[in-house]
Length: 239
Image 1 (tube, one colour):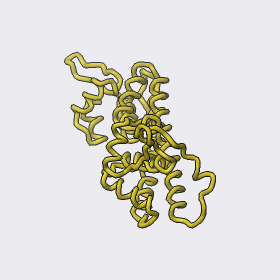
Image 2 (spheres, rainbow, N blue to C red):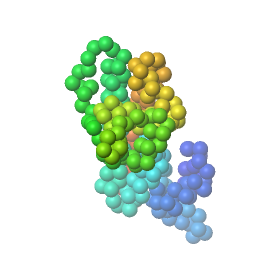
Image 3 (spheres, helix red, strand yellow):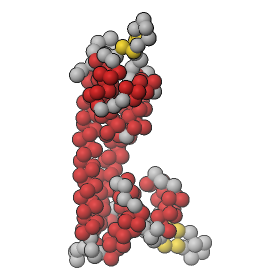
Image 4 (cartoon, one colour):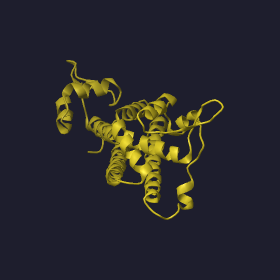
């Protein structure tokens, strides 16, 4: 197979295929006596796996996983994908927490035990660690009106109550969804005032669809990576 044969299936350029081989995302190729690369069905399977991983986990994780697989480090590749699955689970749990919080904010009924599990008070460092962010990011969100932490009287240090943690979780979720800070600040004001939550519900529904799509993409990527891993090194990969 020629680079053009692999590229055509995915709408890529032949140079992109060569670059993927150079970066270790595809297994090394043999060459003809005149120096032309020889691609096989195994390379086609590797390319399908890589592009599926990009769609599911992003380019960095996909590249790390394929490089590890092609360097005979499968456990390192699987660990990278495990982190992606863990993040998806965390996003699902955060979304469920936010939905419960919104439900209770817009309801006259008192919160149930499930809605009171958010921690607090937390310091800015503790909250940043919980979200895997930097304290500077939390300060930026405060400046944008997204977070409104309280301050202790002796030193003026910020501390985040359970409702602040809820707001930070929601902001983090919406930020990963590509929403700008100004929009997130508006959503959080709606949550705090328990009014005008139509926009918030639409945003959460959109994120639910994204999470479902990402989960499906991960299933596809897993199947294609398994097909590549199952093929003997000297045999064509699965079509």
